[in-house]
Image (cartoon, rainbow, N blue to C red; front, side):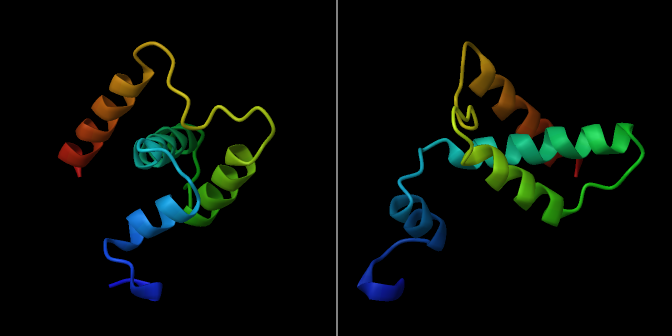
Length: 88
C-alpha cells in the first residue's frame, strides 16, 4: 500500500500524481542511454545527477518534446532500451 491507502507501485503512484504518460518510463530510459553514450564519446562520465538535472530542465521547458514520439521514434527507443538491457 502506498501513502493515503492507494494500492499499486510507487512508480504508478508518481505517474498518476504527476499526470505522466504511459510512455514516460521509455522516455526516461532512452534519454539516459543516449546521453550516457554521447558523454562517453566525448570522454566523460554521465552521472545520474547530470541526467536528473537535464531531464527536469528539458521536461518542464516550454515546448518540451520529451516523451513526444514522432514516426517510429517510440519503437526505436524501445529497441535501444532492449539492446542496452541485453548488453548489461
